[in-house]
Each structure stands twice: as structure tokens, then as C-alpha cells.
Image (cartoon, rainbow, N blue to C red; front, side):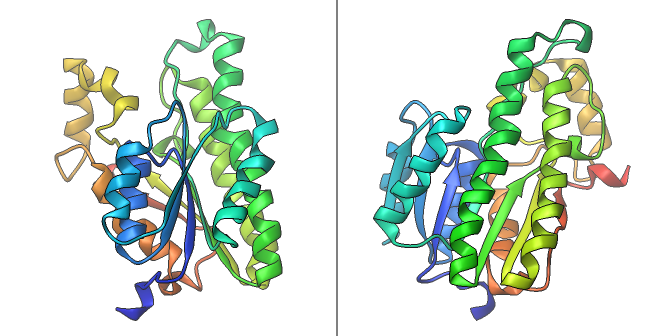
Length: 251
């Protein structure tokens, strides 16, 4: 089990105070990593307390990652507090649901700025530090809509296709430098982002009928996969998009 041990490692998790981000942050902490949570609107206090109770060093940064100007400051604060960055989990994201013909320019830009631009710039910032170290793990959060078109979510679909592409280009350039860049593509997860779908009886039924596992995923379902991709166990994985979807993509 030493392959999965993250003792002495530091992880930056965006959107880490709630939902899928917290599920992954908790998994990394359980494996031994110290955690820097990047949250929006000060949602990290409860998460910080719980992770500290595991004996981990935890720091919370409140930032709007949709504004690319704040990203260098986020990385500087991470390095000032922890001295290094071993793991980056690019999880923060939003979704706006409107038919493509009615999708506003503001919705498009809001989604692309957070879901794609912040991923690019944080990968770049972390990658520069990891190249100096000669090691590092970057895990981007993709989606089933990195492979499919979806309905009424043009900005989200474009952003998640982009996340898969960025994962591959960074992996190609940095694999030889000791850095693994991979992605997790969650299936339909019971989070705030899917609340509207779960409250729609027809759509809820359609989704569950297609998932072989017969249930929505939970934040805890991502803990194992993120630890695997953050650990020595995945040292020969580069540019892979790992589906954690209850079998959705098989149907």
C-alpha cells in the first residue's frame, strides 16, 4: 500500500470546500497529504476543521478563479505556506443550462473563464514549479461531456472538451520531466451542479436507466481515483482521462 502513500506531499485543490472537490481533498488527506483548499465565498471553514482533525496541515484561500489575474497570487500563497506543490487538482467549475440558441455571451464567458482558462493557467503555474522539482502530479476534472455533446450546456461542453485536450498537451510536454498530467471524468454526480436534473423526474429517470450501477455518484466515489492519480501508483500514466461514471460510457 506504500504506492498510495502521500505522506509529506502537498496538494492544491480548487473548489475544495464542498462537493466533489471536498471528496477528493478528503481522500488526499486520508492518504497523508497536506491540503491547500481554494474556495469561493468562504466555503472552506468546515472542510478545514475536518481535515485538520486528521492531523493534516490545511490552508484555505478564498478566490474567484474565474478572474485569471488572481491566479498567480493563489500560487504564490500556496508556495509561501507550504514551500512546494506536489499535487494540483483542478476541480473548480460551474455550469449554465440554457438552450444553445439562447445561451448568453455572459454565461459563455463565465463558464469558459472558470472551467477552462483557470485550468490552463494553474497548470502552467504549477508546472513551472514541478519542472524545477523534477516531479509532480496534475489531475484535471473533465466530464462525460469531454466525450459527448450534452443538451443545453454549450459552454460547459466546450470547456470540458478543452480540459481533456489540455490534459493531453501538458502530459506530452511534461512526462519526460517527471510530471504526470491526467484527468478524471466524473459521471452523473449528486452535487449542486446536478440539482436541476435530479429534480426533473423525467430526466432523472432517463439518466438512472442508462447508468449500469443504477445510482448517482457521490463525492466519496472520487477519493480513490484521485489518490491513485496523485500517487506513485500512477507513475506511468500520462494524458489519460479516467471515467468514474458507474458505467455510463459503456451504454
